[in-house]
Length: 209
Image 1 (cartoon, rainbow, N blue to C red):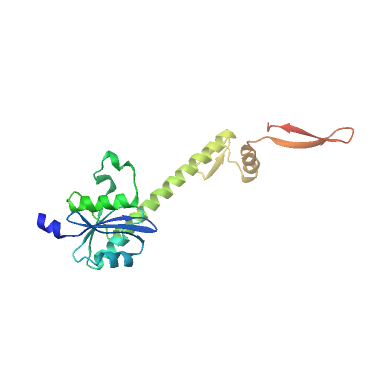
Image 2: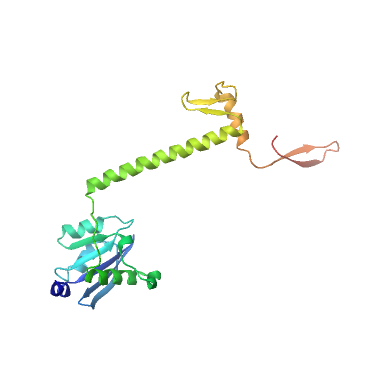
């Protein structure tokens, strides 16, 4: 196993939205280190120079497109969870070069455990479930804000009746609700202009009653 690892090129990839920093090591020797645009074709071309190379990169917002592209081209590539990557106190300073070197070094030592990458279909289903949950939370927050606004005007929200009611339980019509809503949204003072007996204009500052 040690001979196999020594002969294998370990490639660490620090993947960002616009760039990929690549570090290639073999038996502790630095073979190459470069920064590339985030283009799977360019990354594939760079890694293909070492037959049998094995790549690793951390899961992140860029998704699994690079993983699937390299796997489809016969290049061994795995994704690791950022929280499972061993770290040292000196790793507080993070740069693309340091991160890619760290991944290549830990990968060569066999200290990185790959995570399961879902299929495109399962990933799409997960995105749908997350979007539904986000919409549910947005609706809940909107309802809370609406009820809070009604309490200011001594109104009550009746979800079962699909509208608003006053303190006596009577349904508030749109004509009654509209002025009240505008009034409750007025949080700053208003300046009104009046004219005194001499015809000179003067400003008065009033707060809503």
